[in-house]
Amino acid sequence: MIKSEANARLLQQANNAFKTIGGETPMSDYAKSQRSFHENLARLKAERLAREGKSKDGAE
Image (cartoon, rainbow, N blue to C red):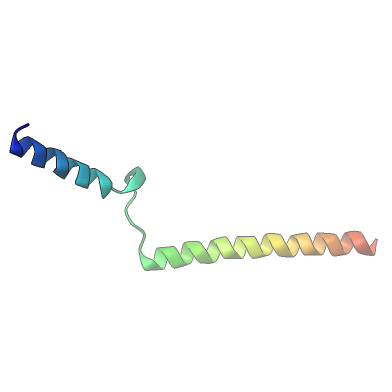
């Protein structure tokens, strides 16, 4: 194998290792915090509705 071919192959492997997955651009800190906030809000809402559903079932 020629030295330049080996370097080209190694360079291609390195570039593949650092590619973004799915073609998406990395999220900014603000976008990450907003996504996390909305996921937590949805989770807490679901937990609250489940607790309220249990308490209504127990009261009847």
